[in-house]
Length: 75
Image 1 (cartoon, rainbow, N blue to C red):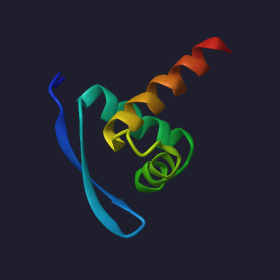
Image 2: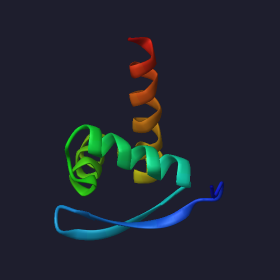
Image 3: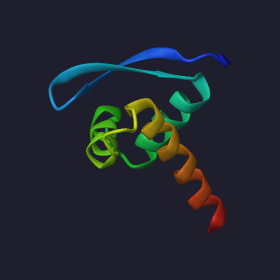
Image 4: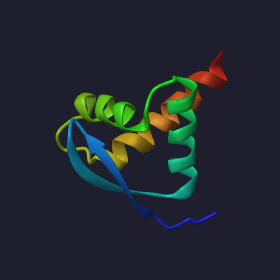
């Protein structure tokens, strides 16, 4: 497992972009998208639409993953 961020490509509302995420966050993000039966690009677009302007997309994805599993562990 790579502990260093790796650049990953996404398409958000028809525009190509990239995020640098560690393997653990990327794999968890893909798992969540699969769990929600949602394409990874659609989930990334939802996160992008909800994030604050000063928060980068990669950070927003990490926070989303963390929050997802935190809420899951509380139930």
